[in-house]
Image: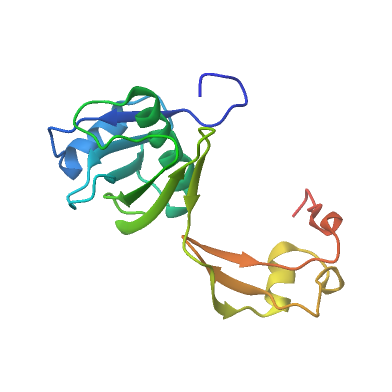
Amino acid sequence: SASRKAGNPVAVVLDPEVEYSVAVMGKIAERCVEPFVVVVQPGKKSSRYSLRISVLTPGGGASVTMAESMVIAAVQVLVEQQPDGFPEVLEGKSLEVTVCSPIGDPLPWDKPISIRVLDDGSIWVKMPTPKVISAVNPQDVSDALNIPMLALQTDLPVQVVGCVGRHILVPLRSRMSMVLDPSF
C-alpha cells in the first residue's frame, strides 16, 4: 500500500496471455523495488474462478506464511481493475486459487487456497486446519528463549503446529516473560 502503516508494498503482475517461466519470474522479482512480487495468471482448471498466483521476493522465493498478505493484495487488484483475460472477481464470490512459490524456500511449494470476497469488499483467505506435528521439550524452549521454566504455562504442551507453515506454540504464564534480556 502507498499509505503509511497500511501494509506491505506488493508488486502485482497481471498477464493472462503469457505463462512466465520460473527464470523470468525470478528476474521480475529481482528488478522490482517492492519487497514482495505476485505474478497472477488464470488457472488451468475449468472453473470460472480459478487463478494461479506465484509469490516471490527480490531475493527469490517466498515462505508459505508470507503468502496470505500477498494473495490478498493480488485479489484486491483483480476486484478493483477487473482486467480482461482473468476470471471476473466480484464481491460476494469465492475463488479457487493455487498459490505457489516456484523458487525454493528452501524448496518450491504449491498450495490450494480458498478465498471469499464479501459484499463489503473485504477479502477472506481460508487457510488449512492446523495440525499438531510434535511436542517439544519445555526445557529446550526455556533455554533457547533464555526465560525461566516458571515462565511457561506447564499445564499446556509446547508443540510444533503446522498449518500453512510450521510454528512453535509456547504457552506462557504472562506475556511479560517475553521481555528478552538485551545481553542475550
